[in-house]
Image (cartoon, rainbow, N blue to C red; front, side):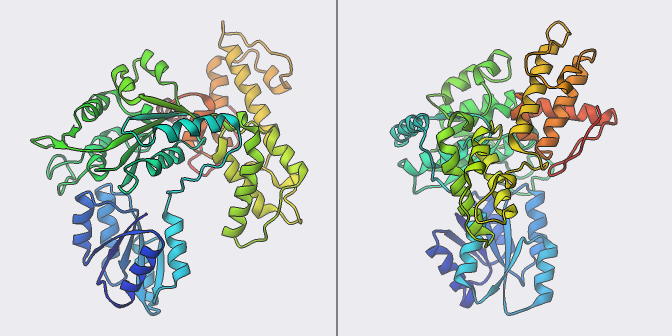
Length: 468
């Protein structure tokens, strides 16, 4: 956890800094907003900024957005200056922390922002084998490829490897290649010089330099544009990078870990991924099994999340009933551990009995897990059958809705499957793409076409019902 404190480091602000250090944060201090921007551009990254409420937090947040710097901002102030707190929140601060600092409040803020949990909980023998290999190769400098479905814990595994490596005292930097537009990803990775392009108001160091001495995680690397892959390959091979608009290469010393939820061999075959880059990254391949193949882990993880969210929401801890556990074990968990975690968070809030009962285990749309998964699987099977020779061939056990697909075009069936899956995922594109088995780029293109045809498409957090 990297904390940037912006403001005079005296009195109560100094006390807040000491509390943060005691809670494991690595603290950097600057006096002004301009100094904070200089520090961030120079690659001295941060996960959270605690800013004196008397400074211009609004302009700081605006500049962060302009320069595409991702950073949570929390305002801090002495006393109960309500007007200053309101200005800070309106300016973009996520929270207002009053000073003198409450140690528990500071710890809670740090915990809410930090994402460096490297505890991997498991009992399954397949996971034991994966962990044994991970611990064996962690001390090396070799590139590692972690593959598995979305939600299986690939980033958690990457952080575990970093903590077990000889670079554990250095920085771990993660870049989500799927979340950053192609035209910005090059600058995000390699940095840029002032004036290199419109909006480049100052030199900015990229993630390669920010991770100097430590580990760089390239999350969902299969979504990276193939033209940028050539530059990435050179950076890994030569251990040097070229900033956008730069005139000379910059040496870097980092360990690269990459993740993907796609079959990269197939992506190479389809011309979407460079074969030489795959060989360079895939020195060791760790394959994380999906949760549906780790039935032994479902109950243990469910109990863990139930305790976690009971504490987080200040509600009584409740054990899982036998009926609720049976429901959890029957579900296929297309979203894997992430979906199970969200389901248990919801169950904790819905439960009113001494135990978490079966009726508290529901999906975001209010349906029961097993029923929804059966419907999606049936629709997927129908769509696949219908795409062979243009004829839908019902299979044993299909429901009436799937049987009625006869006579519809493949495009119509595909559209229904995509939109209903997106509906099931509350508009989460990454989750939906994983369930559908297509890339996030392909999904976005299809949704764009649907929108242009006047068909409503849910945004993140939305859920609708379709007649398509």
